[in-house]
Image (cartoon, rainbow, N blue to C red; front, side):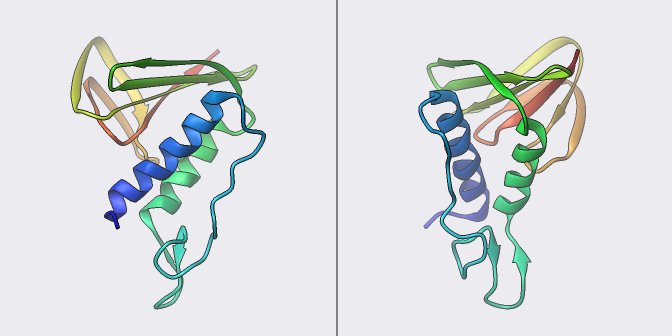
Length: 133
């Protein structure tokens, strides 16, 4: 068993790695609604789990995207995908890293919250950098 945060991280990274492999035509999650392991827990009513929001965010920023590249450097991962109007770069790291940019960066965290910061903390939760064309 893992906690809610790790469950959400693992689920998103699983999809990202499958997409990056360019070997999978489709990836399925076992059940949308299930007690204890679905993206929605129905033990005490309908409760969206953290992984639900993480999945929703991933779908929002990668929907209709075409794979561009994938890079792994030790414990750091970068996936790039794009379409005619934008490029999405998804980054995560198994360890914690702090990257300071010359200018503040807009990024979206795993759960869909927007941030603007010159220093970005990269860790196990994927974050999304969106570049409009």
